[in-house]
Length: 102
Image (tube, rainbow, N blue to C red; front, side, top):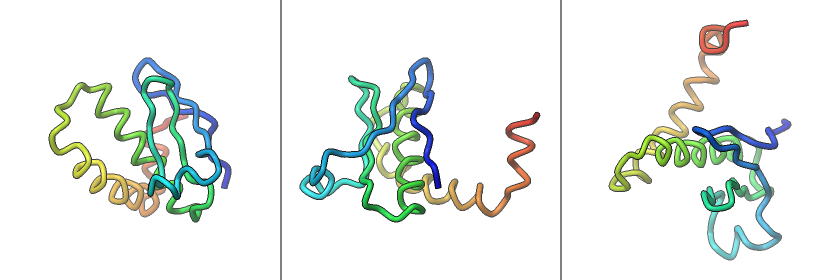
C-alpha cells in the first residue's frame, strides 16, 4: 500500500517521513507529529494496517491543534477515535462517494 507523501491539515502541509533508524524503537513510538517542522514521522517497520492507523492518529492530533481544542483529554480521544474511524471507513466503502463526490 502506498502512503501519501504529505497531508494538508488546516492551512499547513505536513510531510510524511520515516523515523530515523532506531529512533522509533528507542523512544517507544509508532508515530509523532512535529508541528514546528510540519512533519509526521512514522515507524516504517510497522505492519501496513498499524501504520495506517498511526497516520490517522497523528492526523487527528493535527486537526485537534488546528481546531484549538483544549489539550486535556486529547490523547484519550485521538487514541479512541483513530481505530474506530479507520474501521468505519473500511467497513463502509460506499461513504467514499458521499465524502468525496466526483
